[in-house]
Image 1 (cartoon, rainbow, N blue to C red):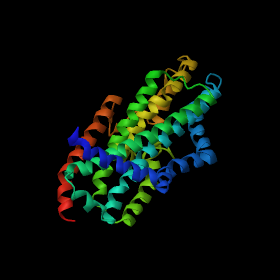
Image 2 (cartoon, rainbow, N blue to C red):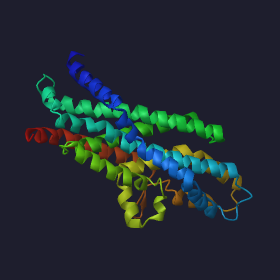
Image 3 (cartoon, one colour):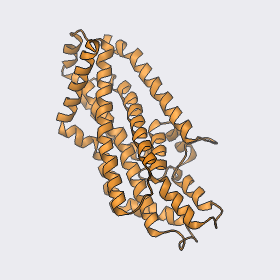
Length: 306
């Protein structure tokens, strides 16, 4: 335990630095808030139009409440997915701020190993992002349940929590490596602007990925955040979609269900192959491990150039 004291202390310090910066917390939730505002203004009607088109000829069989709840679930999926991108990034800005303010040199003058220093940033970002996103998840689920039934089961909630943890790990692993190459907060903030602008499109929060060309879809599906979105979408809206299909009673031969899963990307598709949810999880884990190992290798070299 004594060996971990330095790591635990630095991790607590990094968590407090992030939590004490109210502006950073606000900006980490800015993109999800923009998605919510756009949803209230026009995105809901856009997604409902796609849903109604897929349900053409089946209007008398599908409940309007189910359609509304499905679209609300798509909204919450987009909010959670973008939060899993922006929150870890903002939590990791402490790396750049410490470098710019020369705090980093105070850290390396202590007996704490360099690997423990970068690990403390990583762990702090994971803790902050995971807990903050869980608040978003449970608040969103509460709103959905007040609005109507989503046909949730306990297993779905547990899977959602697990997916959010996996998404936190993967995003933090990727951004930890990227942050090591930023020396000024101005550069870091500028890159955050790019991340905020494109994250909604990457996860399909503004438009379903099926609306884009196959090349763009393939590129997006290589990004772990898109795979995390696929997993969240399945566990968050899968039950209500299956209930709509049950109401149809098989008169369409499953065409509606297949059309919905294709339109709203319920599976990761890369080229001509379609991945199962387990394969998507394995891919995300593999990418996360690669970035963690790369960080461990590159970090000392970046430090030596400071």
